[in-house]
Length: 155
Image (cartoon, rainbow, N blue to C red; front, top):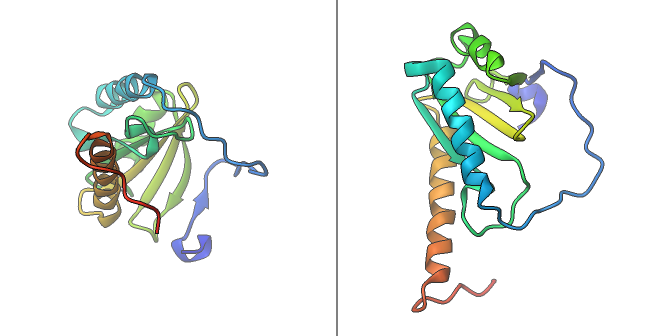
């Protein structure tokens, strides 16, 4: 979907990315970094944080990844930014973009640890997709570590 079709609005200047994407070896610290971020989100939002979940490649133990923690936050209404953005900004997150045409997605970023916070509504198909994809990757890692199951050959 194009930026125009999704109604993407950059709240902060869009950073240019003119370099190769660097993957890091799996880091057990990613789990602890996520835990600290999740705690900050829950402390900031209380019951307004319907779901907080570690998603993306850093959520899969043993998987090389960009060293950026991806967090899924589900709120009742992402368009109601006043109900969550000020509290998250006070916790160190910054609103970077709005995509009202793509399931009301909002993206906030955190500097240290480096994190992307993806905000969706409870009925969002994308939130569900993110969780299913994460769970599938985790299951594949578990199967590949099993002595009785060999990894699939590339097709």
